[in-house]
Amino acid sequence: MQQRIMHLVEYIKNFVLNHYPRQYVYGASVLTILFLAVVFLPSPSENKSENGQRNIPLAIDLSQTELETNISSGSQLSTTQNLSDFVVPQGTPLHTLQGTLQGTLQGNTAEPEPMLADVTLWKNVEVESGDSISAIFTQVGLSAQDMFKVLNSSDEAKVLNRIYPGYQLDFMIPDEGELEQLRLFKSPLEGYLFTLREDSYDVETILKQPEYRQNFKVGTINDSLFMAGQREQIPTQTIMEMANIFGGVIDFILDPRTGDDFSILYEEKYLDGQFIGNGEILATRYTNQGRTFTAIRYINEEGEEGYYNIEGESMRKAFLRSPLDVFRISSNFNPRRRHPVLNTIRAHKGTDYAANRGTPIRATSDGRVTHAGRNGSFGNLVVVKHAGGFETKYAHLSKYANGISKGDRVRQGDIIGYVGSTGSATGPHLHYEFLVNGVHKNPRTILDQLPQAVSIDAAEMDRFRTQTTGLLQRFSDLNETRLLTLNQPSAD
Image (cartoon, rainbow, N blue to C red; front, side, top):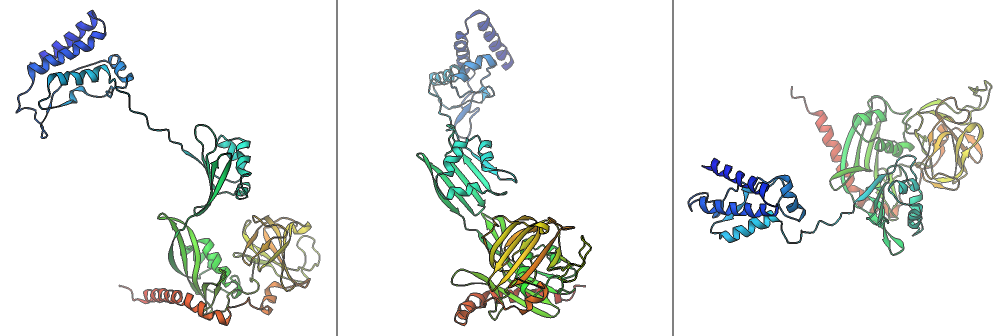
């Protein structure tokens, strides 16, 4: 029976399409539907859903062309919608059903719902080596005039003139094409927000506070501190900083022995649950040939931080024992050394540290840069003047650290350049000289004659103990737990 009905519907549709104008198609379709609904409407006990609705199958097969008018007029009907899925509440009058179907098939006369507002997206650029601010502005579709408008808006905007690889720049550019906002992130925690206000840009500083978590590691020396740190998955920068902390009391080339051990407690930084970097060393310990050195971080009333032993004596000597963290000595201070290039007896007035090209070079003490440039056989040279008549020289650099130039102040441990082979160097190494009142001294022996940096004053010891006692106890407990774990008998 149903098959005959379907044939009848198809016959009526084809007949109307062939003999009547298209506008009558919808009328004929509606009449056919009403006829079938009256004749074959199920009884109240049939096709009843749980919520009291009836499912009435409507077998209508409209072509794509016949639906185009409805779709273009804003109808809710799509070409993929199945008309047999209409649900009609029980008791719906036929004239209501007729109106509903006519509204669906002939197009909804109501205004179409407004589209979602256009979403303005940020254009994100991560600064890479060789990038310039002008090139980045061009890359995102902005002009030089747009760039200068931002640069001239405030003193803070000058930071855009000195961008470095890893910086993040985010541009908000609406459809009008004018820069509305610019975010500059120097790190995940620090940046600036520039916002268009009339004909200039206001600037806000972005400072985010990370979550700090503590990590504790231990290691044993089989070859070098650096290799031991790598085995224990200690970040390279952290192990280098540890070497810097003990740099006034341990020479990590000559002093370490197989079997030396160390432990370190340091911070890790998280933002929104994501790891973003390592923080400061809180406490560290190194046992060298039976002597144990412990260093703990302390911040004084002026906000200056340093590392001290448990008695409050500074771990920091007046000078670091070496300006490199990883190296081997290729040539010592020698007043009568035969020059490797000239083959003549010529005083070697410093110490040569062989290291890979690009190895960071640290200032061995606080001071002021008096020279940063090319200097004959020295190649790229940095000279630092220190208090007390001391002077240090760093030669054959491949390049200078960012921001290092004549007149700059540097602190002990600051990176001032990188190992290279400029000038008359036969291979990558650092030539390091140490002068006292203009006279060259052996940097490897003179240090023992120099005083320590200032330790904590007696009046400040109470503050020191209050700040460090809890941390020292935690560090001690972690070390004890580690020893107990190592000394437990095997399960076998």
